[in-house]
Length: 247
Image (cartoon, rainbow, N blue to C red):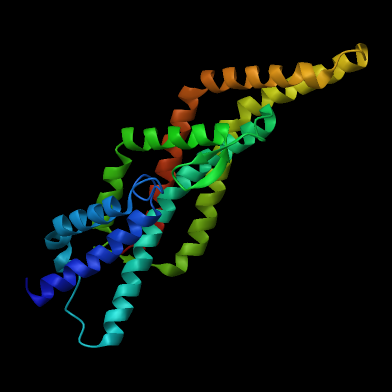
């Protein structure tokens, strides 16, 4: 391996590893570390010769090498983080549903990020992964990785783009959770009127099973809409990358 080829592989591996570390599916905490490293090495080795013409000459000073490595890591983090925001939108929607249905007190371990989450939030996160893979978004992520070498990241647009995409994804989260929140509100209003009319009824004991049952039924009926909104969230994440990486 020549010096130029080794330099190209090293730079591609840095950006690829940073992207996989922060991206959904590839950077899941339940994926063994050796598998993640092997995936980064395999993808970097397969794409090095394709990307090499866009890397420029081998740096002659340590400062240039460190600056180039820092730029590669930062670009990879941006690629993975913006796509991961679409997964977080589903987790937020699930958390809103849990608060409304009364499941917010039950927590399970989320294998994607290694933290405790509520039940519906975990369900929505896993559903987002399934839709992410079914929509071939992992292929689009690798394609965006290759295309990112033909353009330059404009780091000055990162803050504005991040705020815009987070606003859009939060609105999508509210849209996903809106049916369950509406059903929960109607049940609360009905129980409030019932408790005023018949004070002997224990509203909490009657309302909790009703909210959980109606909430889960609404989640099941709203799955087609949820899948469509997940696709919109993934599309918004990839569109935001165009504002950060452009010529």
